[in-house]
Amino acid sequence: MNALPPPARRLLGNSDIAISPLAWGMWRLAENGRSAGDAARLAHGALEAGITLFDTADIYGFDGTAGFGDAEALLGEVLASEPGLRARMVLATKGGICPPLPYDQSPAYLASAIDASLRRLNVECIDLYQIHRPDILAHPQEVARTLENALAAGKVRALGVSNFTIQQIEALNHFLDHALVATQPEISPLRIARFENGELDQAMHLGLTPLAWSPLGGGRLLSPETPRERAVAAALDRIAEDQGVSRSVAAYGWLMAHPAGIVPIIGSQNAQRIAEGAQALGMRWTREDWYGVLVAARGEKLP
Image (cartoon, rainbow, N blue to C red; front, top):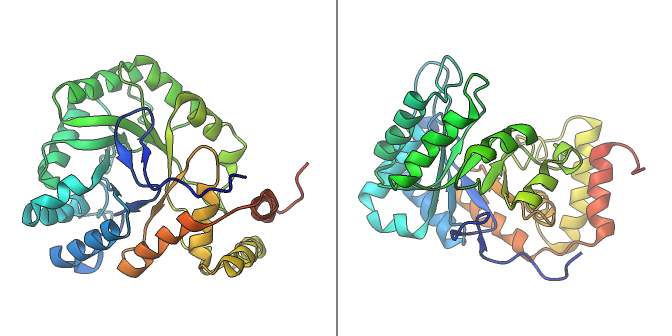
């Protein structure tokens, strides 16, 4: 393994956009009546910890009946009250989910979704726009055309996808003039399929930055219940204790040690936990330690 820690800045895919090696995700930003002031404090906390990539989505805040767009709108309030914050962050959002359909990437809807996100966020341009989940009824050529139009209009700077298969990424990329720069799958020490199914190999081949959502296994790593979860937690704890970090930091560091340059998306809405994640930058991993976590996650020895 490399002796050096991950760089404090890296480029987003093959773009010229510099990002931090960790991101802050806003899936739960609009929960519990959080005020714009509270949201601003979280944003400042992330930035002060060196985390500049902010990831949200138009569906964040939706509870099944209401709240669509609430997370974007709340961040938009923050940006409206403190315009200077915009230049300090790389702003990423996602669209293409339209309750209760649930997916719609038809040209008319996707174009309107991009415009709606811009309005809610109170910005003129989104740095990274991602298709949230694939619409099986949308031809990738039509999706590509809509995204290219948004690029040409200066509404977005770069393109990505979330929860796409290898084949779906290939199909969309084929029709794009400006290639994708990011993919956002679920990856964690409990969700390891991407290490062996070719998704991360494709990311390295195409130059995509993998953004890992739910890097703590939906919180199961912090409160393990099953024998497998407890085994993975114990493997992480051994490394964490040796290096003086928490289990969650060790989980982030484990992902970041992969050569694909995985960027864990910290989902916490607690300023201290967001800032704590930056400690993963200082972690060192031997192959023995890294594979020890993988073996615990597999539940069996490597072949």
